[in-house]
Length: 165
Image 1: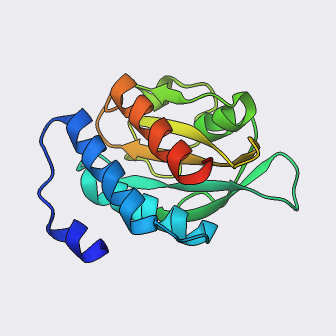
Image 2: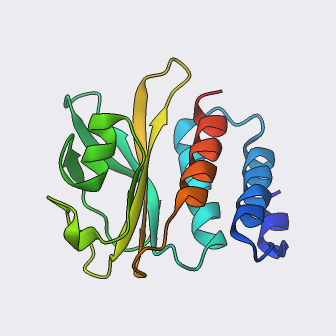
């Protein structure tokens, strides 16, 4: 199915594009239980779908280090290896359990600049089947204010359907 995605012509409208990629992600992952494979596929497919995404990936809750995230599957330049809860945009999402939409990362208190090109960011908490936080999904853009409520709603839906259901 992944081969079909590579040739798929996606709609220009952002919401319609998210809807199409959500269907493709669900089809590709149908029957795949491995968490790493699921995360890698989501990161890859979303990175390939949106030109404004320059870093797309997961920071996973580290079971050996309480309240710390460790870099997981991603697409893009070198990511930060570890992020404490409450630190930066990813840490804020982990701490609060709420999606963070940041139009200007330079104005975000404690922003962690893993890549100096980052201008805006969205981070969505990822919950497992039991409702526990298992990761955060982080997307950076070199464009200011690249993310909005459409991105937040669709990413929350994709991540819920992929990891919580």
